[in-house]
Length: 147
Length: 269
Ligand SMILES: Nc1ncnc2c1ncn2[C@@H]1O[C@H](COP(=O)(O)OP(=O)(O)OP(=O)(O)O)[C@@H](O)[C@H]1O
Ligand SMILES: [Mg+2]
Image 1 (cartoon, rainbow over the protein chains, first blue to last red):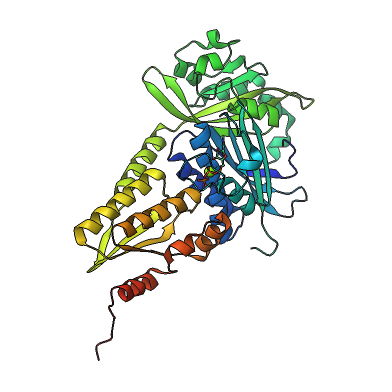
Image 2: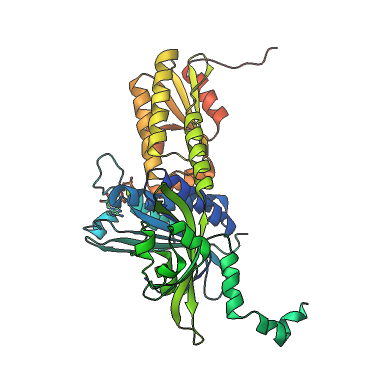
């Protein structure tokens, strides 16, 4: 996961330790997505994905961070957004299950968070270790022709 | 063009001593550590922040001096800067005798002539004022953020603007339910035109709110569904549309409310 074909041009790291930090993640995600040149629809989608990651950290790991960065691919031909979430919580017992729609361990929740992030973003990697924590990297590239 | 830069005499004048003196003059803490996180340099302001002499800090582990939530773990920006070779910055807080000091800190790797990372340089910016401003703003917006307004006899509207977290969703629900009882409203318009984002948690809150109002005999219409919101709801894979009456604009929502109440808006002829 440390392999990075894209290199960052601007990045923000938001520490997640309380309920309201998710709101901060939303604002930063929208700001950076706009800066990277995404249209309003994609800006909104990226904010939702970033918010899911922040919510999960707050809910299941109680502390961690979300880094959001503008990236460019190695040929410097297109821009994108990268979301990196990391926490030092309990980890996810069964990642395949967690990636399924409607799977949740929290009563009353929809269980759509992680699968939505995967649907919204173009690239998605999740790495979980029991007792160590969860690391998620997700990227979305700007489509050609998007000004 | 500034050709003084190419003047070898000028270049010589910026000696190591002078550079260190310059760092000393910077009115914000500056620190350098080696790869083992032992302090190799601390400027005057940095030493004052810790209430120590500069001399006694040299050779000590930085994490034993600052004791922040990032110290000596993976969240440390200095550690990240040394592993990635990039500048890394983050918010953090330093526990001091008179409470936590909110800071933003920036760490850059220090490299030798061969390009090997031999340590890191860090500077700290005090953001306590910014943080307390943000907290005040957050509190104010929380208080302002749940206005349920009577729009017409039997019709209420609640405009949702900005970020919805779970506490705010809870307050919104309470404000709506109270106003429904107070005004015996039959229709409530929940307008999300100005919402900053919709994720699964927010969608779930909206679904719960509409269910609760229905239990009280009041129909809830979700209006202000922009193309961005519509697309996001689809990506979230939530069947909101089947269980909730949705309208793209507030005025479409109001027209629907009038229809439910068997009312008609007419031009006076
Ligand atoms: N960072 C994490 N640490 C530990 N467990 C996690 C983490 N993120 C997710 N999980 C586990 O994976 C499950 C699925 O997560 P997902 O985000 O898809 O749904 P949810 O959070 O349960 O509900 P929703 O996101 O729809 O509100 C969670 O219920 C939880 O058990
Ligand atoms: Mg979730």
